[in-house]
Amino acid sequence: MRQQHMLIPTLRDDPAEAEAISHRLLLRAGYIRQLAAGIYTYLPLGLRVMKKIEAIIREEMEAIGAQELLMPAMQPAELWETSGRYGIYGPELIRLKDRHGRAFALGPTHEEVVTTLVAAEIHSHRKLPLTVYQIQTKFRDERRPRFGLMRGREFVMKDAYSFDPDWEGLDRTYRAMEEAYHRIFSRCGLDYRAVEADSGAIGGEGGSHEFMALAESGEDTIVSCAACSYAANLEKAEAASPEAADANGFQQTDAPSHAATPPERLHTPGMRTIAELTEQLGLSPRQLVKTLIYVADGRPVALLVRGDREANEVKLARQLGCESLELADAETTRQVTGAPVGFAGPVGLTIPILADLEAAAMAEAVTGANEADYHLSGVRPGVHFALEAVGDFRNAGESDPCPRCGGRLVFRRGIEMGHVFKLGTKYSRALGALYTDEDGRRREMIMGCYGIGVSRLLAAIAEQHAGESGLRWPAAVAPFRVHLLVVAPRDETQRAAADQLYGRLLALGLDVLLDDREERPGVKFKDADLIGLPVRIVIGRGAADGLVEWRTSGEPEAETIPLPEALERAARL
Image (tube, rainbow, N blue to C red; front, side, top):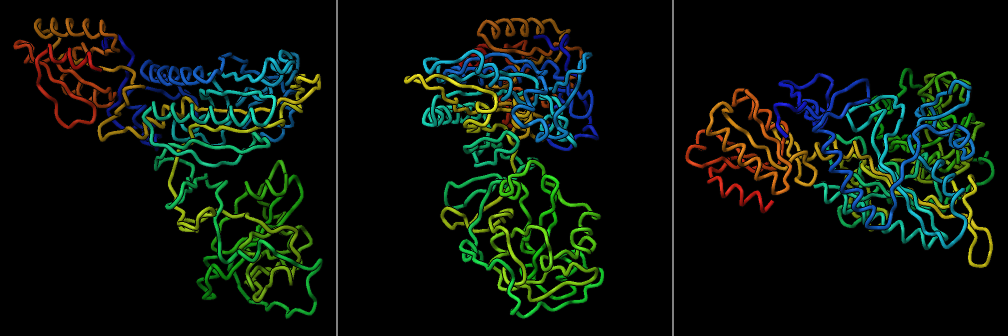
């Protein structure tokens, strides 16, 4: 491809709206352009990278027997209502109506559609197992699109779905898909981790794993053990806690003991936060218990966590089995506790109280008093108030003991690139995906689903392969393999050498971008740095002597070599 006629609008300065390195460089190097918040056009270079990524995905999907299809992006709302997800997905689901008033949604995922398809077409065990996949544009009305392609409202995704006759079959399919994902991300040149994860709105009856690209700009936290192979995202991560060991067998009477010494009231005017309490009362956060009021499917509940810990709402929602969970607003908090935000406590509450293991294990604690400007000291869990449930309801902390081996947990930032789920019968039961087994009995298919954010993968690769002056694409996904620059296109010797080399490189089957523009050399070199192709060949004054400059991405200096040697090196590529 000749660069003179190609749409590559590079930018000299960093766009003000770009926060992440990948976002900044993809804009500056002319790979993408924003149309609206979270909605991007893929320019020719960006689309070429996407097609390279998609080709790798297709090869690995076909290698494990997955069949490609393409399903509609516009989905009838009644399918989502049947599965029970129409309300669960919330405002991120983009909803619309056609001219006849029929409700639809723009698909962020396709479990309902594919299950309905398979339910209508597959009826016998002889047709199972089956795995299908597609690469398609998805839609999600993100509250806050950010970091360019990493969190968008319109994005490209590979989503695959498996149907097996039993759980053993699903286990085999799941392992095969995991191995395919490892090959895909390795071929794309990524440093990544596979971690245990929560299933979220996708749901299901089995486990799930996320594949995370390591990057400081990542929005997810990867929790891993420094001593063993344990790894999970922060939503799923557990931590051993010596202080909470006794709480696993926590016992309490049906009602608080009236014979216990009552808590002592502390006057704490204006002290609403843990920081204010610890500073003014001279306490450690580990001596305090936070009482958080939530609204779960419309009913208020309280969660207790130690003062130095953060609540994990995913774990809490899983315990409660609720579809929606959010922190109570100030008015709801006042109605439930009788006090403003910052003074809630468990003593005297009439709503269900759940406690994290560490909070439940405390001999006594300082809590809110459910009265403005007052706290209580000497509060004893299970004695001064009853607990409905005790469990792991907090985020793991850095340097906490590993739940597997007791080693030290470490935190890293990551970008979620893929997620695999064991769905079980969640969708096949709701949407009637049944098959007849060898004995003539009707059974529910056992499902799995497997996603890769293709456009997010483009951003993750750019994030990990960014240099000081531009991108450095791995050869497998680079938009072109070779960047051929002519310093002075009007010089007949240089132009002839460039045309000759360009033709021979194309004959070798290489993707080549020929910069034949009438631009200053400095502009060409800066653009080449931004674009970041694996190999750069420069034809300049040395062309008269049959010499060119060869530079491999990441190398600080170029080599001057004879033109035939450049062809030999290119052939080895």
